[in-house]
Amino acid sequence: MHRTLSALAGAALAAAFATPASAYMAYVSNERGNTVSVIDTETMAVVETIETGQRPRGITVSHDGRFLYLCASDDDTVEIIDTETHRIVGTLPSGPDPELFVLSPDGKTLYVANEDDNLVTVIDIENRSVVTEIPVGVEPEGMGISPDGRTLVNTSETTNMAHFIDTDSHEITDNVLVDSRPRFAEFTPDGAEVWVSAEIGGTVSVIDNESREIKHKITFEIAGLRPESIQPVGVRITRDGSKAYVALGPANRVAVVDTETYEVQKYILVGQRVWQLAFTPDQAMVISTNGISNDVTFIDVASDEPVQSVTVGQQPWGVVVAPE
Image 1 (tube, helix red, strand yellow):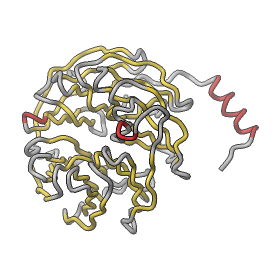
Image 2 (spheres, rainbow, N blue to C red):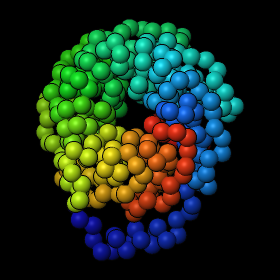
Image 3 (cartoon, rainbow, N blue to C red):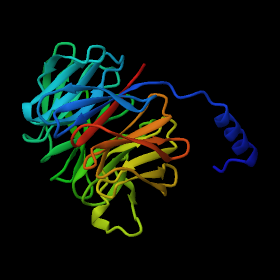
Image 4 (cartoon, helix red, strand yellow):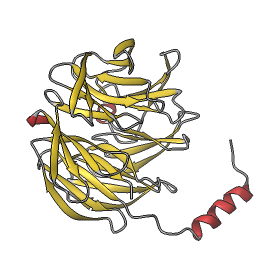
């Protein structure tokens, strides 16, 4: 739907008198540095560095903002970090080599991809216990959950599949073949679609959550870059469902995609080997982790322009922003 000139003028006027974005704390896992960098999103500066276990990758935050959950992959555990003290206060039994996870909408269950043993581990957070282990394809990584919490999607890098799992029965209900090396799964806010990135295939498959069929494949072309250097990884979709951001790995860019037309609107130049993405809670900014340049980039969501890059630890991998 095209906006009228008056609507555009109104939006511009509102932006001109907008109050500054709220300050939040962003947490960046540094895979090679064995640390988490804490960034004040208002000043865009690192304010603290937290020592962690070995090879921290996946990172998320409890819905109330009290705790971080961090995949310490080489320690075969999920660490629990208090967001006030920034101390490790416990662990969760993740299974071997946890890489990525997703938190259930009710905040009670953590679903963890265990890359080395081809399992998804289901963890009861309150009891800090394993509920069950779900066999999936080879090298599971990407984890997405529907807004209603009923459907979990895991991607297996070597099997090249998106596995749809019923969260009540913990059974796989559908397997969808996607392009080579799927890395991430992200549901649209209405739960109608799940977007699965394929790093080597160079595409994002848009899968209908009802039919479990691919309805569209998004491709990327950047002048001056070889196709093999464009490797989609992290995907994030705005709360209003209007656009998606896709991290393109060694292409050093984040693609902005119209979720209605599936057309790429823009490529945003960021740091080297952009990997994962996270919105601030107000969605004024999206932050990218740039693994080779050892920094993150703040991107203004309204303008889709990079605002500032911030140096963090060695090989930043994951990022999450806690609520106030």
